[in-house]
Image 1 (spheres, rainbow, N blue to C red):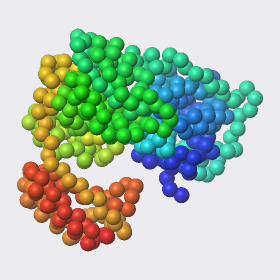
Image 2 (cartoon, helix red, strand yellow):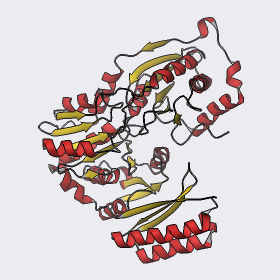
Image 3 (cartoon, rainbow, N blue to C red):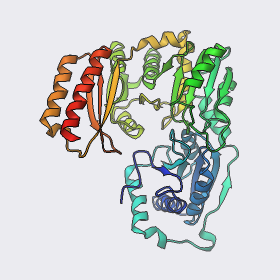
Image 4 (tube, rainbow, N blue to C red):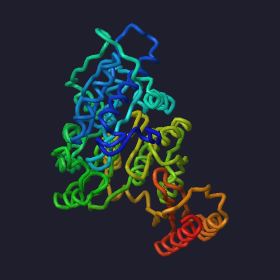
Length: 453
């Protein structure tokens, strides 16, 4: 049986294994059991917060999850549609034992998933995920059944959105204001559709919101952080100062400048790193990036005399590295950014507020701030493979990589790695110009295909 938990919880097509109501109920039961077992004070009632995005299948999953948790004698706080980082905050704020989010992030509406936060607002550790999975796969959880007054109860928490709004607003510098700034928000018909317009409006901005009418099936549909065409058009049409696009569960953000040019997460990280350094907020003068971060970000950080540490792809690994080097800023090119001086997890709204703070702090348009980083040309080829032996054990591929790196001579990089979920090898090259980048990618991909295809 394949592992239930991936790098970011459980995810799949809704109503198809593993994302069935039956499995979700068992995930709820096992999570509740683990929460109770790790509690030292046995005299209090235990509580788990449940939130979701706007997918149609969220209703089914929410009820199954609630039933599973209550059946183990744990109470449920239901907060409805709210960004994933909002659930992390509410879990810690209400001193709950755990927080569970029903969402498949940037995936299409027919997918769904479950993410779990511990009581301190961080993603659940691998050890506890493993324990939950073992309880389910072994069937042991089915034999643990409280009765009578020992079962849990559920209730709606009406002020959760208000609490999260205040929390987000407090991450924006008190001596700055968004008064007079024109902002376009793309809420991806997802979890930010209620809170984002309120937050930016209450800070003084003139807000125009698009894709803020979820119907259960239009989440991430040609909108949001992965599809910025509508946002770009709206920014240009309205003469806005900036456009901000979130993904379906609100933990990612991509920006568009006043000219309609899209900025990646790497660009936003470079801008915020500069501001943090100038404001003496960049703890230990270090930023955590990933192996997929653009070479241009590394060059920009080097020019600013900022140290950069690399982590594997995935916010879990970025956070682990940030804790290890005691950093406050880290993230991914996809727009998933973590500001540990403000939150325990990636938060698209908080990332947007830090970017807007930079615009106000420097009193410059976003296009000018973006010049702090020049993106290196990048090309990636995905090669289907029949097997996945260690790359370093294949002399022909090692030689091709070495030849590419020699030609780049420090002006770019080569990355060859297997996909974690598919029978595929990803070949990525970044170089000084399009011609060299494209040629080297094709050459190395050809060698990979010959050896592994």
